[in-house]
Image (tube, rainbow, N blue to C red; front, top):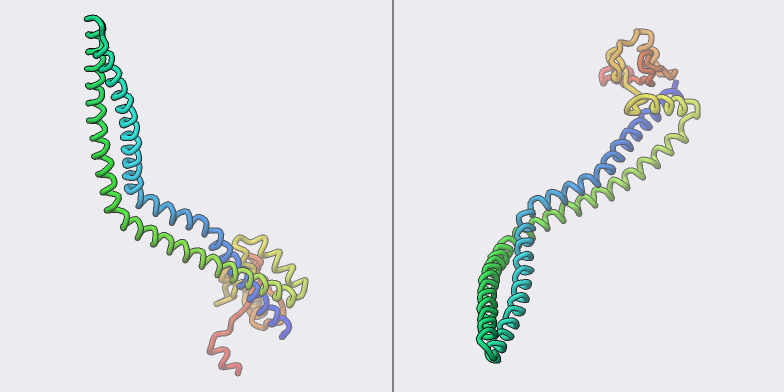
Length: 247
């Protein structure tokens, strides 16, 4: 009886270890998704800041393009002025006048557009300056969450390794035949729960009512008893009153 009771205790410990291993593995597997969610949350909250950054960059690029185009237009205007000064007849003079007027109008349009983009650029830079402290705080909060997640992952990895070592110890302590039965049940049953408590004449896993003689055998603990319905290994935990009565 003592041998079987000892085996049951080891089986319960093995079951607890396996349950903890599955839970820890699930928590570790969920960490990459959680990390992505934290980053996504930051990106969503910083979206408006990114939009202003894009607006600033577009305004700066447009201003640079317009300034380059204006420089080319001024070169064209200077060339038209030289043509005007060197014109030898009325036809050349009229053509030079038209070119010069067109160049000056184009320059004026470009300067107006450049000024508009400069105003947009200044407004964007001002807004970025106002938002940067908020984004910095948000980034710091995000980094803190990510650091906590990494710390959690390290702790979970250590716990998982410890649980696996404990499982190996329990495997060695159990008879091979008993371990084989446990592994067969845990592999077959969803959730891997191979050991269940018998309480109030019921299997707590599948809730089937146990026959009195089966419950009596479980209480004696001198043999491994399996549930007739779900095939789990059953064990009995005496109540405090029962323990006091037997001591």
